[in-house]
Picture 1 (cartoon, rainbow, N blue to C red):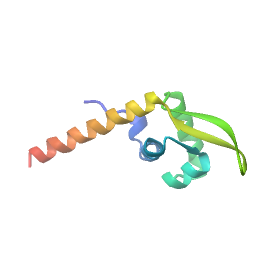
Picture 2: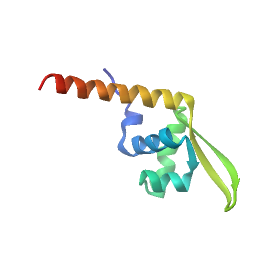
Picture 3: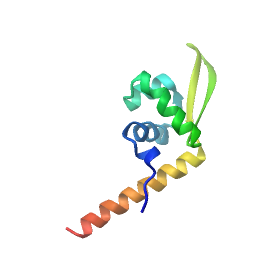
Picture 4: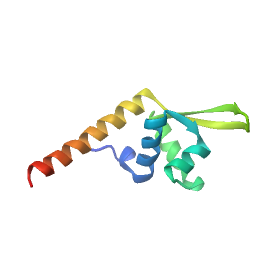
Length: 97
């Protein structure tokens, strides 16, 4: 079983986990919820966007123009696949205890 290293990087996993639950949010909300520093957020989002796991767009909010980040259907599917792989590992370990 091969894991997707892009998804299972701790910061990208946190970002995708938040987006998995919320589907979309502004970059500011995402940085706070995933506890990722602004400096590295853009780098991680770029990597996820290149893989097709997320998409970003500009949106006008009450506070002005913000960048909204959204998990794609493909990203949602790939995240679920990685979670299933992790569950399988846990189950295998539990079965062997």
